[in-house]
Amino acid sequence: MSRAIRAAEDLIKKYCIKNQHQLDLELIANAEYLIIEETELNGLLGKIIFDQDMGLIQINKSITNIGLRRFTIAHEMGHYYISKNSNRNKHGCTIGSLGNYIPDKSHEAEANKFAAELLMYKPWFSKYIKNMPVCIDLIKQIADDFKVSITAAAIRYAEIGQYPIAVILSKNSVVQWSFINSYFPCRYLPPGSVVPKESNVWDYFNGKQMSEDEDMIPALSWFKEDFKCKRSTYFYEQSVEIPVTNSVLTILWQSDFD
Image: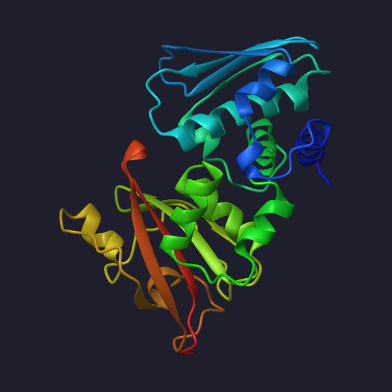
C-alpha cells in the first residue's frame, strides 16, 4: 500500500467516517489545522504552504464545479500528508497536475492517489459499483453521489471495477492521456494520437453535434498502433464534454461481439 493511500485511510479511520455522505472535507481539514481560503490564483487551481503541524490551502475562487473544488482541496491535503516531513513545503497545482493519472511516484500523482482514496474510499466505492456495468450514466451517478468530477469517477471505476474499460481524455482532436485497466484487451494508445473519424469525439472537435449515446466502434479505430488488437474486436463507446477544460472524456468497454 502506498503512503498516499495509507494516509487517506488513516484519516477516514481517525474520524470514524462510515460512508461518502459523512465525509465533510473542509471540517476534516480544519480539524487537521489546514486552513482553506478562496483567492485569485493565476494559472493554478490550488496551492498549499505548510510546516509539520499546520498549513494554508488556497483554492482558485473561479472554480464553480463542486467535484473539481473538492478534488483540488483533497489533492492539496495529499501534498501535506505526503511531504510534511520533507524539505518540500509548498506546492502549486494546475489542471494538468490534477489530471496526472500516470501511475508513477511523482508528487502530483501521489497527491491524486490520496485524493481519490479519501473521496472515493475503496470499500465504499466497491460496494457502490458492485454488479453495476459501466456506462456514462453510471459515471455521472458516481460523480454526483461522491461529489467528485466525472473524470475522477471514471478513473476510479477503471481502477476498482472489474469491467474491461479504457478512459480517454481528448482535446483539440488529440488524445491527451488514457487510463486503461488490466482487463481491457487493447493497451497501446499513445498521447498525441488523433481521435478516430469513426468516433463521436471527432464530430465534437469538428463543429458538429456530439451524441452521448452508446455506440459500437471497431477497436482498431482507437488502437490502430496496438499490434495485439484484433480486426474483429468491437468496443462500446460513450463520450461526454468536459467544459472546464474544453475537452472530451470517452469511455470504451468490451462488447460481446468479437
